[in-house]
Structure formats: C-alpha cells, structure tokens
Image 1 (cartoon, rainbow, N blue to C red):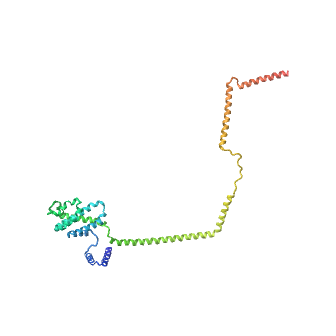
Image 2 (cartoon, rainbow, N blue to C red):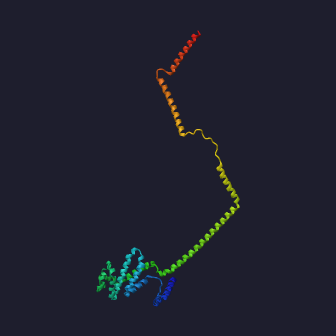
Image 3 (tube, rainbow, N blue to C red):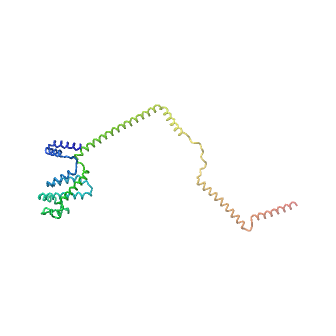
Length: 317
C-alpha cells in the first residue's frame, strides 16, 4: 500500500511538471472514488463492459492487445486455444450489444476493420451474414449469443481466467523502478561490507607474515655463527669425500670372457666322454674276438716263467 501511494505521488509530480492539468483532475477524481487500490480482474472487466456498452471498438481492441502482449503471450502453449476462444466471444458480445443498440454503423465498421483477419477463421464464416440478417436473435447461428445466460457465463469465464493468471502478470516498469532501486541499494551495501571484511583479512595476513619474518631474522642473527660453522663443516665434508682414493686392488692377469670359459668346459667334457666311449668300444671288440686279452696275458706269463725256470735250471746245472 505504501509503495502504491509513493508511486501515485511520483505520477502526480510528473503530471504537474508536464502541465497536464486535465489529466491531474481526472487522476484526482479516480483516486477519490477508488475504494480498493489493489489490482483485480474486476477492473479489467469494468473497462471491457464500458467500451462494449459505449460501442468503443478501439477501446476493446487496445485493452485486449495490451493483455495479449503483456499477459497472454507469456502463458504456455496449451492455453492458446482458450485465449483465442475468449477473444472471439468478446468480439461477438460487442456485435450483439451493437445490434441491441441499433448501431448498424458500428457493425459495418467492425467488419470493415477486421474482415481481413476474421475471414481466415472458419468460426466467423457465418457471422459475415450478420449485418444483413433482419432478425439475428431468431436465426439459428446467432440466437445463442443473444441469451443472457450465455453473456453471463462468458463474462464469468473471462473474469475467472483473468483472476487466475493476473497474479503472474509482470508489474509495469513504473512500479518496478522503486523495487529495482531498493535492490541496487541493498547490493551496494552488501558489496561494501564484503570489501571491508576482505581488507581486514588482508591486514591480518600481512601482520602475521611480518611477525614471522621478524622471528626468522632474530633467530638467524642469534645463531649466525653456528650456522656458518655447520655450513663450512658440511662443505669441507663434501670436499673430503671427493678426495678419497679407491683401494689398491690389482686387476686379474687374464680377463676371459665367461662365454669362452663355458665353451672350453664344454669342449673338455666332450673330449673326455669321447675317450671313454673309445675305450669301451675297444674292450667290447677284444671281448668279441677269439683271444681274450686277459687269457692271452696269462699264457704269455706262464711261457715266460717256464722259459725263465728252464734257463735258470740249465744254467745252474
């Protein structure tokens, strides 16, 4: 309520600045006669009924186009048929009211102005006969729309439809100015508060870093001599390690490849096995022959012994 009153004052001030005296008087009269300052669908219906009863086709079309551009166009696609049906019913109510008021010129003006748009709709084909019908209230295509039940039902449906979706209608730019200004002020205050917190955190961080640097400087100055000696000792140790000579170990006399050793070992083994195989073959060959090497050795031994004995005996004798 306070926001509406504030905007009314702004509008009144603007009208005085522009010098719109007649508009100021009309605004003052409407504000005094207004009992409820809220936005309701009944006010829209009052404007429609006023334009229809005064045969103001321009007023009806202007108000409907305003709702179409700012309210109906933002609805979902499944509401398009309902909106179009309400629009056609509103225009038909305008024709019925003009006929009841014997305003034939208004009926002709209606079809002259909207013929190009309505002839593309199958619902309006029979209505082009309406200006030439003598008793349209008794004609079958138009008799339904002359009944009070249909007119009341249509107005109730339109009012309920507007009341349902009017809450989703975006507010005018003039009304949103104050809200946007308040939002900008609030955002600026929050921004300033966050900046101050950030500066405090930066100051605390810089103070802690400076204290740490001071402690490091004090500790380095107090133990500077010890650190120098440690550094020198470590440097000397590193230099002495480089000066150490390896042990005096004589290298081997003959450096032989391992593969060569393995090859020679294999050769010696093969030679020994070959010699052993030859010996076995000779033994088997001698065994298979007529004379045995062992018996032959015995016979030769006995003959030599006899010879030795005979010779000895003969010689002794």
